[in-house]
Length: 264
Length: 32
Image 1: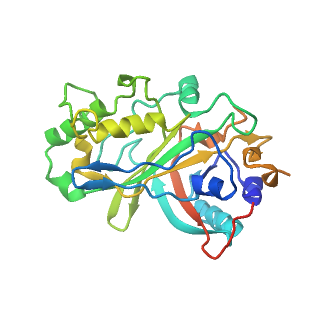
Image 2: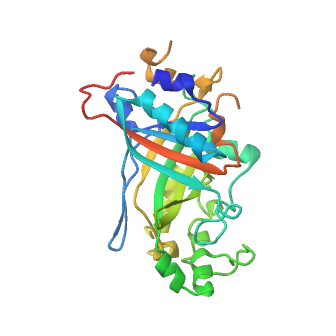
């Protein structure tokens, strides 16, 4: 972990640590927990916790590949890779369904307030918590849906991204961040993924806790009023995990919250 | 915000790679 903390550039590589590691070293980071499971009829939305999450960003797939090899080399043999998924920008912030994603994302100070823990001890202040889910789209179902049916599932017109008076089950209505009390703002950094002929969305949402994510997921699955988000008509999460993203000190990951063994 | 992993706040990402790791099964105890 210390070696990893020393080499990463936090502008192009974000690190998240799972609760299992903290349990192994008898350390507690307030708010870090395991993602709950949810049910939508017969569909189980899984919790698939992992121990370490690395998000590499860039403009060159080859460089990302070699960066990931370097990180793997540092992490072995203490860790083994459980997944490596490449993502990409599609037509200026669109999901592979064709709809724009992240329209309601906060910016500037609002983004910082939503995503970053702005109080706490050294080693905690500056942290973030990230919820990650890999969603798989059913493109055959999407192909069969009319534009009106898809617009009603999302709650926006695909033609101009404008919200309209869509059914209550529309995704934008189930997940409107300002409709929650307290407001459930998250900073989403999702991107499409594709592998072979499968594809979907890597949902990535940073928060100053997991409360906003859980409030939105509960409403999406209809826990409060029985109305299920129409998004589930054509897409399903197959993974789900929570991570703590440590703060930074002097340009390096600040792992002091994990104890003296993690600092020099 | 020099105490934050700055990639979290970067708005533009063209390509990304997400890698997950589990503590290796052949390690009896995890060490820093």
